[in-house]
Length: 89
Image (tube, rainbow, N blue to C red):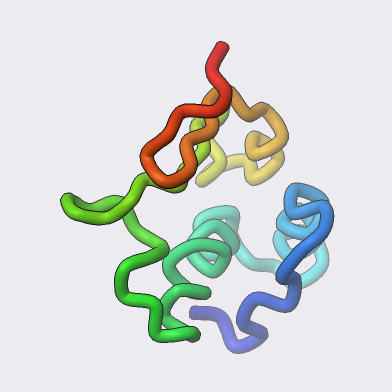
């Protein structure tokens, strides 16, 4: 995890992720990890932040590769919360 941790916890996450890449020099992958598994680790939430058998599925699927272009998180194609599908194309 990067030394600055995750400085944003709510709001316009896409904008905040883009800022972390542009202004702090993090890679898109570092930002995504901090927003998911990194936060779960900080708060000792072992059942959150990753996709594994036995965990509830809270996830989004986006168009594009957010590990290369974090702005792809703006292009949400699918939303699943607690294993329930809420949005799909």
